[in-house]
Image (cartoon, rainbow over all chains, first blue to last red; front, top):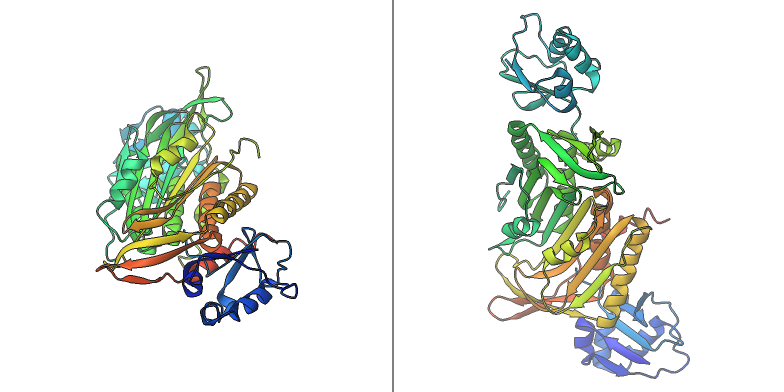
Length: 83
Length: 83
Length: 159
Length: 159
């Protein structure tokens, strides 16, 4: 699946998007954040406070317990500040 | 003092303004409406339901128990429908 | 409050340009975060209404709108407000009234604009009469009970 | 509902003209009684802010704003709605976002415009970063707690 990062999540990760292939045991958005945080220090920094990070699956907001199976695109970002 | 009439109050009275000189016993806005209603049938028709008529003394809204002494201009009109 | 402009109040027969009025509030300053512009238009009531004839008490209209504007400025930290109300004959789809409000934050701008319209509706001395399609002169417009209820919303906060 | 236009939603780098957007809602019809136009502007924060850089998630932004607009149309009897949100670099005093709403009655137009802004603030995927006067890149703008509280107002009516 494609992972997208925005704002300071993007800056900490160091890229705006990438292909990821988590194993099947990574079932939820929360699991995926934990899995990403284990990749290296940059990801660990980006996802150190999971509770403040928002996620979208296939361009719709989801909660952290949403299941990621079947999604083509997941995005991680801080709370929105538009408008 | 000068009396002004607006909208259907004006139409019923048959004029938009006039000079009036009520005697001293006509003390309040309510008294003045009663006094006007006694002038003739047109005024009686205009002021037949005093409760729906609004008044302004010297260009500021007042209640029916406001005293008219000292005012230069009194206006009578239906509830406003601007905006 | 600091930065608050004196409100602009006009009562006029001629049409106004909402863009000119709201742009004038904004021009030359960078402290405004929210600009709310309300325009009240003449509805044709399902094709039955040709125009509205608006009678007004000119001298009091200006004074009363200025009082309402001063009240809004005392309640919300506004950076500017413009109110324009027309009188005379206004054809269906024509503009009747404009309220434009500038503030740092949108909540203040929305509330103040809504308050101004509620108070204009129930306090400003204007009366509308319908002119019907076909040429007949219709009745004086009856006040909407909803307008008094809407205006009453703001009174709870007063006491 | 009858007469409701499909909302117009645009996400763009270039500036917009509020007058053109709101006039487009009104043109050629006489059933609109109230037109509310909100413009969100870039404040200079007391002269310290040079510009805002707005990052966005393009594909989701359109989809999310369309969802918010559909929600507004389902709640209020609107006769039209236009939402435009910019991204990229916006200088102090520049326009960021527009919400224009047309309805028969002003209460619906004010509420729907206010709702749309509250929901855009908390749901549309845009992130602001400050560029400070003097050239330094400032921090990402923190969400205001007031925005969540403002958006929560509309939830009581949902259940």
